Image 1 (spheres, rainbow, N blue to C red):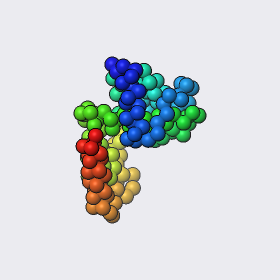
Image 2: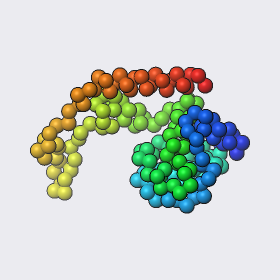
Image 3: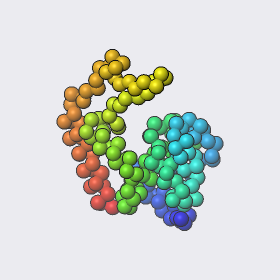
Image 4: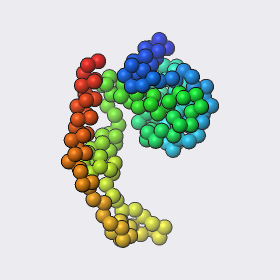
Length: 169
């Protein structure tokens, strides 16, 4: 458990590294959470803000990694507490401190680097319990973007820049 003064220090560190975060203005109206598509997976933005304010980072970890960064919570917040930005900042901070993200997160990132999607196309079951694919539905196969090499180069540059920022701290 993190002490309140440690939470204040973390908040200041996050402000300096990511954005001007304002979780202290959150009054738990839950408008951010009411629009979140990942609440069933543990991401409850207003709870994450409150737990962070209390210094209970160990309680928010599951919610941090299930957030899909759709930014609905940021848009819905009447106080501009910026929960999505706080979640992203906390992820970055935890990784910089040596926490390993969940295995599925790494697989997803590898898929993005390999094929520019988070998962390859797959067969799914229809209402008649038959498996269908893009081909059986008459849909064209998904091709890699024409500029996949440029996409990979940009990913490498971004990763290098992020690693440099972490090393500087």
